[in-house]
Image (cartoon, rainbow, N blue to C red):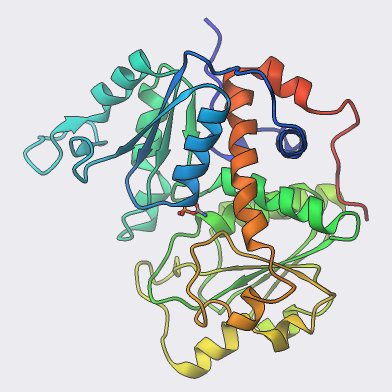
Length: 351
Ligand code: CP
């Protein structure tokens, strides 16, 4: 029996495969397939926390490809509460173990997808991604990661699509800037954003306050991709200077891994230093502004940027739909996915 093909982390695939998925998504956006390659197939989309874009884009993508999307809110009235740990006495709130639930879903569905946020108490425990790992371990059908503690790969595909369609061939310099928030959010989106920018050959700058470094394993992968592509990697705690010469400004709030779970400082000067505003954007090279959404206006980014000519956040969100189609076809109808991509070599950012 052949090994199951999943779409869980960017790091699981060769860079060429990721870039081909982005090309497939762009091709599917230009020419949606007339055929219904998922006809007769049901897919389970399991959410352990709220979602707008991921939930709707995957459901719409599945429907448009002829399949039936089944969305499950896990443990919040939608299904039984789920246990991921093995060997535990299940006398808490979880009434069902993923060891049964995941293979049961596989008897009904052609693929299962999971959105699971980290608990925010221990980075070591969250980094192990217990729920996603259980899905991978117990699933008999392909697993899709719809955001976990260490990655949001479907978001990253949409991010690179947006850069390719709005900035190519000059979108070469990528800035990820940390942004203020009221909560310690996961690093997942930031992790995947810099990983895909680096593997696409962009020069990557990460601006973050001292103490907000991304995980060392993420940084090692980004460093390796930049080295392989002859690109620069810069890490700075000076946000104003970091904008100079950037073509893409990607804002994201995330919690400190050093002071794990603690909310970021809320004083006005700190927030003003790190919020994306027009003055900072004007230091860059006619840049594109990206954010995965949802975004808190005038905390993460000023109205003038989000409503201004720089912003591509609605296109970026639309691209989640086309990226979802590319992932579904890659896993469930690879012959359709391959035929969507023009024969030309996958695009890389020119140097
Ligand atoms: N960007 C993103 O994943 O949005 P949702 O949390 O609304 O799905």
